[in-house]
Image 1 (cartoon, rainbow, N blue to C red):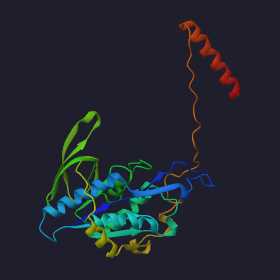
Image 2 (tube, one colour; image 1 turned 120 degrees about the vertical axis):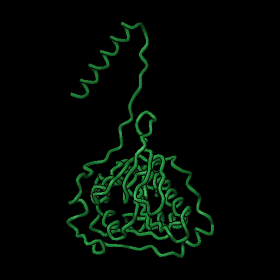
Image 3 (cartoon, one colour; image 1 turned 180 degrees about the vertical axis):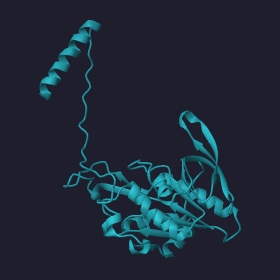
Image 4 (cartoon, helix red, strand yellow; image 1 turned 45 degrees about the vertical axis):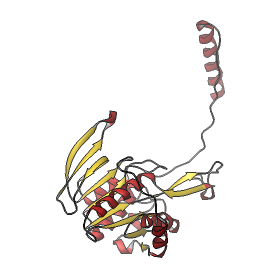
Length: 267
């Protein structure tokens, strides 16, 4: 059986950065890239299932959508034990959103026919928490979000999970398989890649899929197909703090004065 793990290469800001000339994103020269933290836990959970099964019974496939630089994050997945890595990209995908990415990943899942699909609850850069559920919606598969515990035997028709609710509560659920699960931080302890694993990963091929491989065309991806788009990105204006001293009446009077002054500036 197969487990597909959807992973993302996320961007972190350098200390100093600039917005692109078009105002739609940060200039890439000021970004640092790494594997999304939530996806590290998803990969580890897939590896635990693989290692508990008979040798060769479970195949773990890491899948990501993105340009060539994403290969670096996929190599990390291979170094930690993933059997295969697939990167999907086409220039027509520029401007895609989380839901469109979900549709693309669903196309991979249809071709690979896994028993389970794992994804992180969210990404550390945009935090949409939408891709995993978009995969499930595109496949019309059972799904559960914010999974904190998982009990699943390879080939089983159901899986038992505990999903995190607000206030620290856990909800016990039994879900039919195949299913899509988004996994929460802390569900396990992700491993470090061994030196041997890193060397082996460097020799493993990364499969590069295009729109044609998924039976999709340019009208189904990219900015024109996205349900959301960035209109403008700005650096927030730093706020000002002022201590108002005196009696309560004096503080109130001063506050009214400041508000009137602010309204005058706004006008």
